[in-house]
Image (cartoon, rainbow, N blue to C red; front, side, top):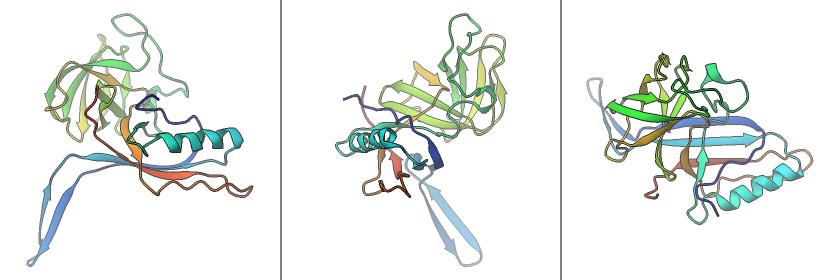
Length: 219
């Protein structure tokens, strides 16, 4: 079985997809608050499907059995924003890279200016990115880092763009060479134990679950 696996192609009714920044906060006398961040930020997800027919319901049942019970992972992404919003036609990204060649959403991490500023090349000229879009930095199939873009940016005539991201890229893990991805940018996740809810009645055939990013040392 492939690891990571892809999310099933079903309709989604509701999603929550947000990062968590671990932190401790302490409130003291004199209206003073101190906070300390620690660890590595990670993504969490909550999804609910539309009403599913038998075929789609079966896809979800199979997905549930393959998405974490035995340590497997799946590629979680924002199902309501699977590609840059200004470039989203409702179909997978396509076009021609500024330097020539077919563009399908894959690009190259050209340089890391600092943990929150990266330079990406291999894009079509004029490729537009908006605040809230996503970029995935990939070291290998199981080593991925997902980020939201903080400021609007447009690729120049050479297909190069500088992006401001949050949260910061872990430069101890993600050293060059790496690739950058804008079509269904993803992170590795597992379904949270006990969260899968799959009722099967004529009134209710909407499946829901929650999931959390996991960090895998893999190739």
